[in-house]
Length: 252
Image: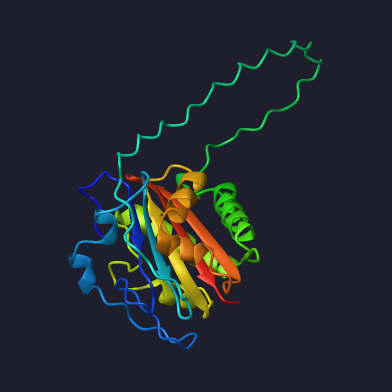
């Protein structure tokens, strides 16, 4: 979905193998079907129902049994998050002057660093703490509903982080990127074949808000509370529309 003309947060749901959206994976693990994109021209579930500010989208993988209902429509646009402010550090107190010795120590000339050797700008990825918070909240919900907690898998995390970063950079929200690559293909490229599902969201400023929105949507909730899932990877990235979130689930 191209959201360049919209400032509203959204929720998405896509279920692989269930026909809820244009993202599918064959039942055999590792056999990835190229996702169709024809449904993206039609009205999406979150256009009519969304409970909270933000945008989320869920996809279920090969063995998911979840069904999805239309997500509640947003009741209000998210309030813009304020830019973090930094308190200037106190000016360092001058150190007491020292009496120069009879023989001054030689000084060394320092050259400014080569611009080409400067550190590259940081990627717009979410912090490890933010992503860990999503995992923590997800596992808390699972424990409350009788499911085992998920282990963090770095392969799923790599795929999730790359997808959130790509959505933030190119200003879209979807399980399928503009080149047609879907959740299963991203997981396989990261070395993980038995992916199970994917939730995405945009516009929720915190991990708590994103997980709460997913839990208020039947399809996303079904992914989070799928007791057959064993692993999770989370990616968070900030873009011009706010924070982008991706949860990827797996069976191994």
